[in-house]
Structures are given as structure tokens and as C-alpha cells.
Amino acid sequence: MAQGVCVITEFRGGAFRRVSFEVASEGRRLAAALGEPLTAIALGDGVAAAAADLGHYGVEKVYAVDQALLKDYLAETYAPVAAEIRSTSSGGGASELSPGERPTSAATLATKRSSRLVNSATRLLLAA
Image (tube, rainbow, N blue to C red):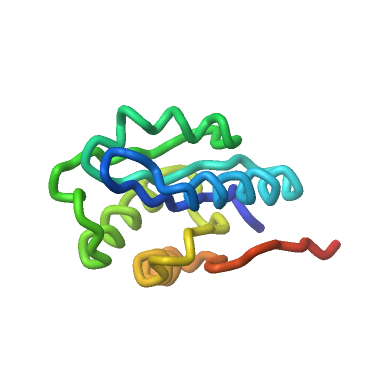
């Protein structure tokens, strides 16, 4: 049983990439269909100031890590940080959605958390 839906965002150059808002919107639709909360993981340099923007797309809670070391995307740095957030948050076992361009970090995180991962999807259909 899911314990929420978690989206993993992409933040570069002081702003979220458009795909982050798209995946948050789809995450909101999925979370609503499941009757579960929607959270987001946002990592990057300067991300804390922009984290509230995700609320416009239905994200209820954002776990933001604002560090200069996260300025440039590296799966080796992003995956452990995201996994730590997921292990210390109350959403263990949640379904996770991520933007399609960076599957390595999301796949590593899903494996570490034994959770479901949706990556590079254009639409999700829930069967009853």
C-alpha cells in the first residue's frame, strides 16, 4: 500500500525546470486518485527560495536541500541525499515520480527505498 506520492524535481540556474512542474502536476493527479499526500524533493544551490513554487502544482510538502555542493547534478551526490530524505520522512514505501532526463538518481533512490518508480511517462492510468 502506498504511503504517498513523492516527486523528484530538477533545479538548475536558480529555477525549477519546466518538467518539474509537469511531474508535480501528474503527481498531484496520481496522489488524488490514490487518496494519498503529495511531497517533493528539491535539491540544489538556491532551491529553498523557490521551493514554495511547487505548491502551485499541488505539492503539499517540499523537502528542500539548499547546498552549493548540489549546484551541478551528479547522481553520486543527488541519490544519497534524496534517499536520506525519504528514509527520514514519514513517506517510506511511497510511489515516486521523476523527470525523465535524469533516471539514474531516481532509479537508485527507488531501489534503495524499495519503492515504485515512474520515469519518462506521459500519462498514468490507475486500474481499480
